[in-house]
View: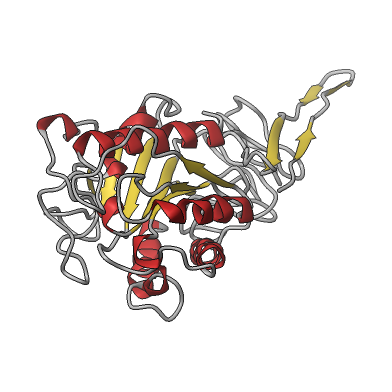
Amino acid sequence: MTQMNRTLRGTARFLLLPFLAIIAASGCGESSSPGATGEVDNTGGADPGTGGGATGSTTAGSGGGATGSTTAGSGGGATGSTTAGSGGGATVGTGSDSSGAGTGGAPNSRPTFHVFMLMGQSNMAGVADKQASDQNSDQRLKVLGGCNQPAGQWNVANPPLNDCPGEKGWNLSTAVDPGIWFGKTLLGKLPEGDTIGLVGTAESGESINTFISGGSHHQMILNKIAKAKTAENARFAGIIFHQGESDSGQSSWPGKVVQLYNEVKEAWGVDYDVPFILGELPAGGCCSGHNSLVHQAADMLPDGYWVSQDGTKVMDQYHFDHASVVLMGTRYGEKMIEALKW
């Protein structure tokens, strides 16, 4: 993986005329591409488009986005993305692609809806019984659907976050999943005014083959992404992934992880890379030998990471106990904060 930073700095020019002062100013911003350490641009940052926008102005100039502006000019920036569409992006569903991200242009200062995918099998869906401490009442943390909540809409996130019983019928309605603690951890660093959206697609007991193109759960993933993209100011921000028990030791698995990442990114319609964080399988369970492939997959991704299972325990040969679910979810969150530079 390589790292490349590009910094665009605007210059200010002042031209005084006999009876008229015209002041033109262009803002400054920065964007960065992921590199070997998986670093990505600061979510919510502004990159001026061609023609530039005016920071703090009430009206953005033609051809650029405006941070803090109330009205964007022709070709304005994309709301909620670090990279807007060519000639300017748009609020989701307007102008640029429906994810609100493309190439060129700039985001404005409207709040961003940071959307994260929760993917994998049972250790992402949750098996250990949920406790009162797992509940969430923070309105800034949402889930698309979720167990025992209305499907197809954004609800306050509470475990479990994936569909129950799921397409295979194995996801438990009484469980806690690492996604809720991932989200709670992110809240501590969430940019002011922004919101988090979690999209759960985990299915217990399933091979990665069922999630990639041609698999039995692939269309479900596409459907959820299509719905998530319609949210106002949505920005695809990252993926956490815990899977491998059903494919333990298979040398082709890392390549299929990369395929899944590319297919998810294509479904979102974005041209930037997002952090993809894999979790190690529990050492006290069936399949810890698979963790070398977890590390390999992370190295193969353009913005890949893995989090350790050190200190976790299992309640059977496959599944984390409650304390370990909390620990893994927190580690996912801390690693995502690091990757997004929040």
